[in-house]
Structures are given as C-alpha cells and as structure tokens.
Amino acid sequence: MTAPATPGGPGQPVIELRDVRKEFPGGAMAVDGVSLTVGAGTVFGVVGHSGAGKSTLLRLVNGLEEPTSGSVLVDGQDLSALGERGLRPVRREIGMVFQQFNLFRSRTVLGNVLYPLRLAGLDRAAARARAEETLDFVGLSGHGGRYPEQLSGGQRQRVGIARALTTRPKVLLCDEATSALDPQTTGEVLALLRRVNRELGVTILLITHEMEVVRGLCDRVAVMEEGKVVESGEVYEVFARPRHATTAAFVRSALHSAPCTAPRTGRCWSGCGPATRGGWSPCR
Amino acid sequence: MRADWSTFWPKVLDATGETVYMVLITLALSTVGGLSVGLALYATRKGGVLPNRAVHAVLGTFINVIRPVPFIIAIVALAPVTRAVVGTMIGTDAAVFPMTVVATFGIARIVESNLLSVEPGVIEAARSMGAGPLRILLTVLVPEALGPLVLGLTFMLVALIDFSAVAGTVGGGGVGNLAMTYGYLRFDTSVMVVTVLVLIALVQSAQFLGNLLSRRILRR
Ligand SMILES: Nc1ncnc2c1ncn2[C@@H]1O[C@H](COP(=O)(O)OP(=O)(O)OP(=O)(O)O)[C@@H](O)[C@H]1O
Ligand SMILES: [Mg+2]
Image 1 (cartoon, rainbow over the protein chains, first blue to last red):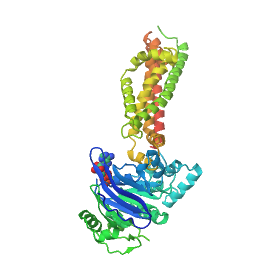
Image 2: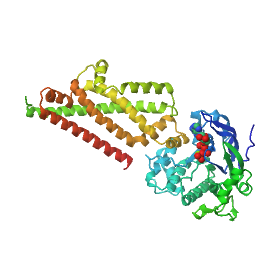
Image 3: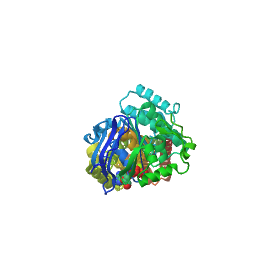
Image 4: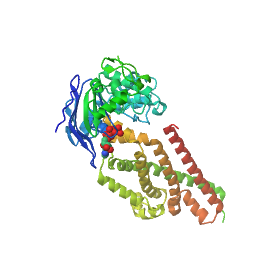
C-alpha cells in the first residue's frame, strides 16, 4: 500500500521518498511507509512528537540510514543504488545541521568550516577564501580564530550552518536546529535559515517539534506520528484547517499563548506568537 | 661495603641516560603500535566506522591475554622471542622489546577507550559531509580525543619508567640495574636512596610534561 505522495510545491522535486520504511533491529518501526516530495527551493517542515521517527526520516535522506524498503531519491538519484562509497559525493551535495551543533571542538571556527571544503578537494587558498565568505554570510566574520566553546549557542549553530553550507549544497537538512536555543536566538537562526533559502536558493528539509518554527519558516509541512505521515500540505492550510487530531494539537500549541492575527506576507507568516516577541525578524 | 662516590655519580648519570633511552624508544614504538591497534579495535567494533567482527575479536582476545600478565613474567615468557628479534636477552635493547609489546597493548586499550568517549554526533557530522572511515579516524577522532590521549600516554610513560626499572633488575640496564647491583646486592642504602630519587624525578618530569601538553591541547 502506497500512501499518496505529497505534492512538492514549486520547482522540480529535489527529495523524493517513496513508501519508505525503516525498521531497526529489535523491531522498532521508526519510519512506516512514508512518501513525500520536496520541491526545489522549498522549505519543508516535519513535525511530530518525540520518537515519531523524524530524525530517522531525515537521516534516510542523506543515506546515514538505509531504508528497509522503499526508495529515497535525491535530485532524481536513487540512494539505495549507491554503496557507502558512492554516497559520499552525494552527501557533499546535502548539508546537515544538528540540534547539538556537533562542531569539532579540536578545530577553530574557521577550521570547522574548512573541513568539508578540504574534503571536497579544494586547495588551501580556495578553501580559505570560501570559508571566510561563508562565515561572512552567517555573520561570523572575525570569529574564525575562536574555538566553539568560546561561542554562544546561537553563534555555534551559525558555525554549524556555515559548515553545512560552505560546499554550496542544493539541500540543507536540519535536525531540530533550534531546539537547544532560547527564543531570541531561535529567531536569529530561523532568520538566517530563511536567508539561506531565499538568497542562496537552498532547499531545506527541517524537522522540529515546535510549530512556531514551521510557521516562521516553512512553506509546507508534514505531521508525523508513529513513523507515519498523518497530514501534510501548505503551512497556511494546515494551520487554518488541521484535519488530524495531532496536527490540531500542534497548531493549538503554536497559537495558544498569542492568537495570530498578523497577515501572511510573501511565503511565510510574519511575526506573531511568543517566540516573535523574543525577536523573530519578519520575512521580506 | 660502601660505594665509591667519585665513580658512582658517572654511573648514575649513565644509568639515567639508559633508562631515558629505553623509555623513550619504547614510548615511540608502542605509541605507533598502540595507536594502530587501538584505532583498529575501535573501528572494527559493532556499529564502528569499519565494523569487522573477526578482526575485533582477535585483537580483543590478544589484548586480554597479554594485559593481565605481570611485567616480570612477560619478560621471562617473551625471552625466546626477544632473542630471536633483538639477538640478545640482556641489556637495554633487549629490555625494550618486552616493554614495547606490553605497552603497545596497554596503549591500544587507552586509545580505544578515549576514542569511544568522542561524541557520536561529531562522527555523524563528518559522515554527513561525505568523509570516509579512515578519514574520520585520523582527522576527526584522533584530534577530538587528543587531550585525554596525551594524558593516557603520560600514564603509560610513567608505567614505562617503572617497567624499565623492573627490566633493569633482570639485566636490562638503567637505573633499575644500578639499584639492584649496588643497592640490593651490596646493601648500600645511600645508593638505594639516590636511585629512588632519580626515578621520582623522572616520573615527576614525565607527568609534568604530559599535563602541560594536554592542557595546551584542551585549552584549559
Ligand atoms: N539506531 C536505532 N536503533 C534502534 N532504534 C532506533 C534507532 N534510532 C531510532 N530508533 C527508534 O526509532 C524511533 C524513532 O526515533 P527518531 O529518533 O527518529 O525519533 P524523533 O522523532 O527524531 O524523536 P526526537 O524528537 O526525540 O528526536 C524511536 O522509537 C527510537 O527508539
Ligand atoms: Mg530526533
């Protein structure tokens, strides 16, 4: 049985999951028949409670996990056809950002951003120029010589984003990229991700358990429960007319403390809700 | 009988030199060996970057067989191999061989446990960038674990000073030999005291340098 594929929004499909299942040894069915399509240039959010299978879903997209069945296509290429070695060049086209940042503590900020560039085979000078440029983009020029432990959480995540972006990937995967941050810093990081999408045209697939993140950043959203996508669609539609109980609960959680009356501008919601007061920058 | 101090001091100096030589050569060889075995042990474990059950089991068993053997027994047990490899069973070079064998497997365990304490998220990040297993081992795991690794190696260095003294008592040369021939066989307490002081000084300097280096690496 194949679940209906989610229309991917504007652009060619960049990520396509076809009836993907992932069962871990021991019997946990982390992802249970998920089909979804993410169109080029889209910001696609996946929400769900802890254990819903969000991280596993994300890790299937860059081949960190192998599907038990079904197929994962990135840029039209079926990942299961590639071995571990064949996956490496594909992974360089897909940046990944983590909740706990996962920065190299033994390397400086610049060293962290240089790492994927050197891996991609750029020579020292070219890599350095590119890394500086990326640090500038994320607003950390001048911090290159510092070590991760000398930075705030928000700055660390911006290093994480710079490191994921510097090889100019088509796709950025974000695993709870803002969940370790306070509301103010969350707003800054979301604003940066928005710029990554708008200015660099990077397709973003992000997972979160915070509906505010979806509202602030995403074009489309899928709601996961027990490994299955129970609802998906355009963010404004899902917010306006949640059909599934879980979705309704998530939407309520986002709207609860401050009813949203702000108009929707462009392709995202302009600020409202508690996190907004913490400083989300309005979208352009 | 008392030692002749005018000829004794040059002997102390020579013996100290021999000890330092034995210990440093052993440290160099066993660091290379221990790092290789430790990396292999770490990489081949279940869920590691290059899982291989057979290799992991063989290495693990080997280490578990060698490690519990008291060093003095290891010297004797390895004597035939020492003769085959080094060509002799006495002197400093002959002492280096069993010391290296024992230290290699000790260091291998130290390396393995320090690599295991590196956060898995960092390895995941490197994998997500398309880094291969060998690359991850050498450019992520070793640098990330370097601070505690240096402390582990310092621990082994101190143990090697101890080993070298033990090897000295069975004809290995160095300060241990001196303590044995003058201090023990001739019941000369003052020689005993001098050799103990020399050993304490060596251990203190080793620990001091190791701490300094690891603090530099850890930036604290
Ligand atoms: N390597 C693994 N081995 C076995 N089971 C796993 C593994 N990884 C995840 N699981 C299981 O799969 C299910 C989904 O996990 P996953 O991490 O994808 O959830 P999640 O939605 O990201 O949760 P969270 O919000 O807590 O991060 C859970 O039941 C988890 O226990
Ligand atoms: Mg997760």
